[in-house]
Length: 537
Image 1 (cartoon, rainbow, N blue to C red):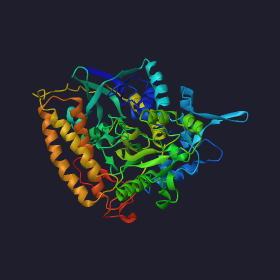
Image 2 (image 1 turned 45 degrees about the vertical axis):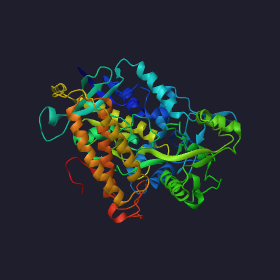
Image 3 (image 1 turned 135 degrees about the vertical axis):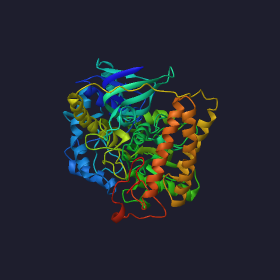
Image 4 (image 1 turned 180 degrees about the vertical axis):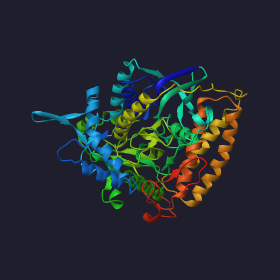
């Protein structure tokens, strides 16, 4: 089956849906999403969106905080573009119907701004502690009422359709859409478009412990790499310091906003410890807090540390953090009376497909936005609540650029062959997938996690090489399934992370190697760029 549209958007989080709404003003849009349209990392985002919104704050301060967190690798021009466009994007969401938390100041009502780690001012626009859900619901409502947009739920992209592979090799690589598996029927559809937009989120499921939803398997990054796009800075995986530690809790994040409102990290005996690790204590950048917790746990042998906000008024906690309060209560933890057991978990992929300010990758007609992209905003470590902001700003810019490209496109999309199974049969050994999936996530956590070493990275490289060979053989022998596609993708992303981490012989931001504990600005004040078949410089 073949589906044609002007724009193909893969992913249904804030980046993909924002782009789709704007692109639909001038053309037809197909949205592919792995599960339901609402299932995205955006939906689970708690904290908020960073934006200069008060007289006490300035663009210069937000830019400075972002650059500091990024440890020297942020692209300053991108930082300035994103920060300065933030207020306009917030107003756009308000007009769309998002009800952000506000407070009365005499006769006026203004946004209730939160504060998170690494920020020098209160600038986090939020909807209680369910910001992502509020934004996602507003975007979905607008999408569902737009006649130019068609949504394909339960479809997972398999591979991008490149001109050189399926039409002819002209020297310039062009992307004309993607093949995608209809998970309900088992058929592979051909989605053709004049502009393809990857907004597939991050790759947290590469690790054993993550705050990400199950869909975060790095699909867009892996597909782009296989198609020949440049990938940058995959060594910088952000581990959120505070994920709920409970045997029955799965991937539940305890927002940094708790520490922004005074929450303190403590050891089992109630001792606070962050002042000994950084002058900003509990509000230090995430990489520092995550490493501090990792250090304390290795020293004590304990399973977790504790985040305590119980000394705040009960009414304030319940009103400011209703979602976290309710979820913890489900597990028998009343955060108004007791501290929350927490551990670090893989949270955000700061690297990704290398793009310019307009979200355009190194491949013609392929745009990459949101967590899938590496725009240069985050550098070596993302500042809290800059992620949803980046998605909004770059989606806006990408939509303007892509609409112009589509408008100027002359002639039809080239004829593309249908998907071929090539004699593949249904597998009766699904255990191979589950075994390899588990093995990758475990050695990535142990060898390529918060703290790394050359020896650990070498071990990880040997294992991923063997597993990729096995997975590739399995991929071509059997009919594809959702689990096989995701396994193939996490193995590719794992290899990219390992290679990138091995190339960076220093410690910077989220990448910490005990063999090179200091920054090396002379040799490594640069992005790590990988491309299939090309040796890194």
